[in-house]
Amino acid sequence: MTSNPQPNPSLNARNYKRCFVGVMLSESTQEKIFTILNPLREDFSDLKWSRPSNLHVTLRYMDTLSHAQARSVQAIVETLNPTLTCRSQTILRLGGVQRKVLCLGVQSETLSLSAQRLDQALETMAEVRPRKHEPFQAHVTLCRIAAIDTRLPILLMRLQQILPFEIELKKPQLLTRFEGAQPLYQDWRTKVSHRISVV
Image (cartoon, rainbow, N blue to C red; front, side, top):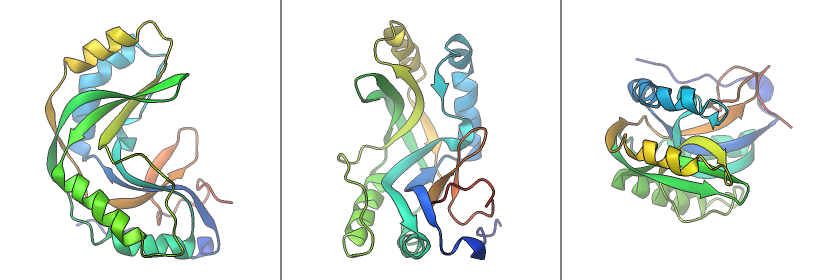
């Protein structure tokens, strides 16, 4: 049984950047997606692909939280139900004018209910204000590509050919982005103070 990450007392007075409540994919699903996408990663190697260990579904983006705020949100997150399996059904194109974010659309009533419960709980917390957002649409970000890239239709077609398939998810967590040679998303309590993004 894996123990919970232990708090790092030296970070109690600091702020955690890029916090979000998310659900990480299981290790077996990460490996499966990496295997499925490997030909595409090789053929489109210049794109910014998500590293397998970072694959997740975001329930709510929180942005910067103080240590006290993070603990309050953590208490809410621990009441959310885990999601075991769901279906990845469609490829979504999200993002702005210059760059597109290509994602796996995920069908899960449990995820939708968890996002709804999370929003309702956060509304009662005066000290925490999540960033404004679009209506919840469960997805897993795969890569980013320029909107004017002429290969976009080909990439979309090839991605559609791998669907649908089942994915396994872990229990929701409060995550933050650790900075390093490559960004890494992990539980906010993880002891890697030399890599944490703080202000």
